[in-house]
Image (tube, rainbow, N blue to C red; front, side):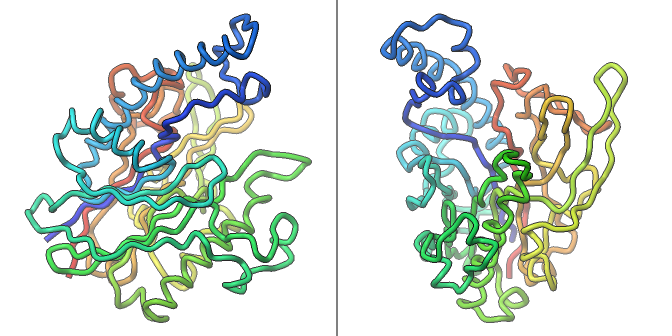
Length: 369
């Protein structure tokens, strides 16, 4: 029997409007800057119209990407609430795939913007095996002090009793056709932006390292030090870090070149160290593992993997030939594709928006025993 599990950062699935752009130009959408807005009430009216108009296109593309995944279990990031998820599933997904994802799990986490991790799943797999819910746990309240993780590096920005996870580590126990599977969903601290001469990725590395150390301890404290060799579990989500990237040079007219570059240090080393879990994407060619296009104008452009399905050694051994699929048809036209990887975009996809998400969803079919 097989189960398809996927992960997708669906980018700001919200049910509220953000009017802070009226007073903070940094948060103001670029199209609003084209118009003379005379007061806050007028700004709010225009912003509501802009968001409603753009959201419909965006969520149709998001739904198309999810439909193409054909996942039985779907781990999501950047979901505001179960109400938002239900509205999206009923208004968009249901129209495309019917009554698929009946079961949804989300526990409010720590994100200051109110975006959480969530899981949707079907009643059964494509083979007709039942997907049974057993238990769900949140680890959002764990602190650095409780796990003994506080150190000098963290002390630059954090306090001992601050919570470790920027969102949560959502833990879901399932039985697939009677076989156990535990799913961990995370969305790690973002890399932020360059400031005061400090690279955004380096400046936030300590927090992500602490988050992943916490994930590993949660698993080992529950299942033991040999958990990876003996248990069926996956760690899914947006890790906001990478161990390699494809540096991009050139222009659309002259052509692009792609140079593979490994990273000497990554927060993800916590998971890959001593083979604790396997990044299944490494089974793909090194120029075809990316899930996000990053660009700072023409000065800095690269493709990298931010979205992961990490397999326990038990699952890895059981699925030696399984290869993750990456759905890229929802990427905007600004994304630079290596030669031979181009895809047909979904209808109405724009230069940089609308799009399904800034991230590409990843899905993988796994056998269980």
